[in-house]
Amino acid sequence: MKLGVVVNVMDSDEAGATTYRLIADAINLGHEVWVLSTGNLTYNPDDTIGAYARSVPPGRYTSDRFLDVFKSAKAINRWITLDELDVLLLRSNPSVQRAWAQSAGIHFSRLAMRRGVIVLNDPNGLSKAMNKLYLQTFPEQVRPHTLVTRSLSRVEEFLRDCGTIILKPLQGSGGTGVFMVRADEERNLEEIFEAVSRDGYVVAQEYLPQAAEGDTRLFLMNGMPLRHKGKYAAFRRVRTGDDIRSNIHAGGRLRRAELNDTMLQLAEMVRPRLVEDGMFLVGLDIVGDKLMEINVFSPGGLGSAQKFEKVNFTRAVLDSLERKVDYMRYYRRNFSNVELATL
Image (cartoon, rainbow, N blue to C red):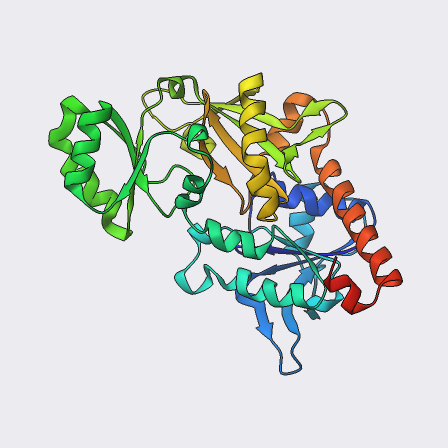
């Protein structure tokens, strides 16, 4: 399998990140992997999509060793054509990129799909999920009571109705710019609102008391909870001190996930829409009986799930990709292009 992986930047230091675990395991299985960033994509005059990409020599790699070689003189750099690829994985996060790059990966990868490349997650689905409003397109019972606005008066009214709310920017990720406001602290609301709304719309959500116990990230693959060797790919994040965020880089601590029927029912309720939108690998962030976020761009933490469950979940992801490539090759051998378009 020839695999391309789109990342935010080429010289990341995140050795433990899910993206680099996937890449290292793919190389260990004998696959050819090329890494590129959104800024390295090019539309060619011959109607192909090219990219300046980087790879490493065949070998055995951990994610740490892969990144060491990837950033060294041993790395292989060349122009590739995306038509050469079997699969293109979109693992860049638009919310932390410059404005011009936010949708570049989506638009270029749409063109690659027209050339027969398997692109995951589906760029047409990702275009619908460019901000947190995507969550509001799922069944009402799976999500907290939410207001999205640029009106301070509407937020004030919402606060009085809910008693305690969470404010965060519509664009963004990783717990950046997240505040909790109580009704008896309304005097601070205007200042917080101005800070959060500086770059766009504000999301106001009802505060869920269960958030004090942290949240659970559950991975879905092909619309179903990701399981490998009987174990679910999931973990808990528990906040520390007075910080309301449980994100790891915000000081949250990792714990083994304790999944229950409610969490699995939430996954089942969002499955049809995720499948319809072509979301191959997704991370659900669950608090109590509600979804706080649906991570579809570059959900991370498979290594954390692996740490607690003692199974290699990245191998399950690669197994699924291999099957998709095998199916595509079979259909290409046995059907014409016209017939493929109708499948």
